[in-house]
Length: 342
Image (cartoon, rainbow, N blue to C red; front, side, top):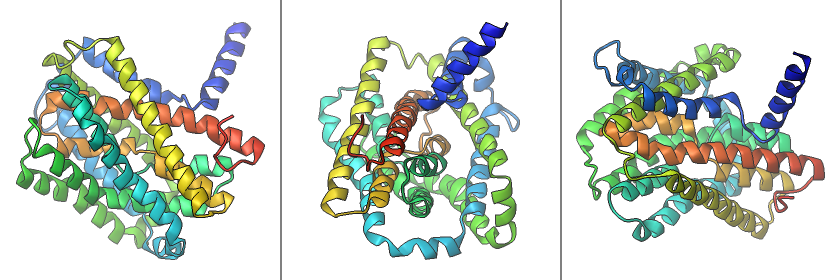
């Protein structure tokens, strides 16, 4: 028994060091469960899992608005050069890179993989994990908080815009009027209401941030489960083997390092301080799983395709946490600025 306990503690410590937490494992467990037991995720009705995820999306963005302090955002505007690099990387560099690669993807399943990769590229940066990694590495934490918050807010508008441009030319179909209505009701409305109530409930939201994070993660797991239930029931993964998933993973890893390297070069060219350099490479290269899964409920009316479209995001999320965790700890030990991955 003691050996098992020691082994578990050692495994848990190693997993945390490389950024492999329970949530990443739970994400892929949801995919496995959906493949063997899809029926609960395909039920319809006001109390079905699909409907619950819809309500949950609205609450996720409402809670996000509650934690978004207008005063703190105004105070963080001064470091505009850093903010510009991060947001140009997040919302311009990423999408343009994936658009350039579109010609190398075929039709059907590969087209959906490309669409999923583009969805990753169009998403805002993460909030909590980006700030945590910047803090571990010794970066500019206030700037990280500002940029992560602003990125999430901008993403509410920019991500649907990018996806609207791409989806109108794809075979997936895109009802602009329907998406705008859902966007207002499920995302913009709750975010705006949360921001307006920040002065009253902001302190409460900050106090219970950890509990709200667990709520966010629970809804994300449900969205992943229901999306993959539809995908498996419609045999969307037929014709795709493990090799396709591995290649997709390598592509996501290459995307991360390519963007990371470009941001690093730009930061050095602009003579950022070490702390700002760390913030730039971390905030500019990460993508938000929370916003990605939540907005997928609005942007992808074809539920069967949603699972395969979300797969690149799940892979990118897992890889970015593991890689950035290793980089952050290495930088903390060496006092580096992100240029060395040793």
